[in-house]
Length: 136
Image (cartoon, helix red, strand yellow):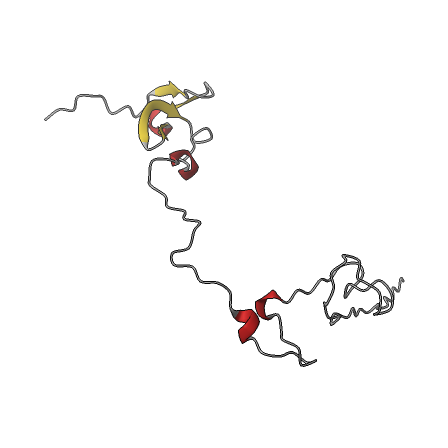
């Protein structure tokens, strides 16, 4: 049975984007949002259908609320700290920026943020090395 169209082995065509001439068999159809268009593009102009263009086509659930939430009871359950006072559990805050450990001088002063009853447990440590360069 004969085909409706010629084989097009030597057919020349233009890219619908850049206008350059290419063999017809090298041009590819462009797909936009999963829809096949009638636009033929050369290999350099052809873009694969990007998934970001398909936003809204598929349902996406992005819940922010929790089902059956419970309060944080770790403050009472965490026990005592080193000083024998109740520990803050998951609410213990360690601040580590200027100055390290929060205190602005001796320990009797308030810290830079004005937060009271925060233990100064952070310490800074560092090292400086040497580099030897020899040239010949």
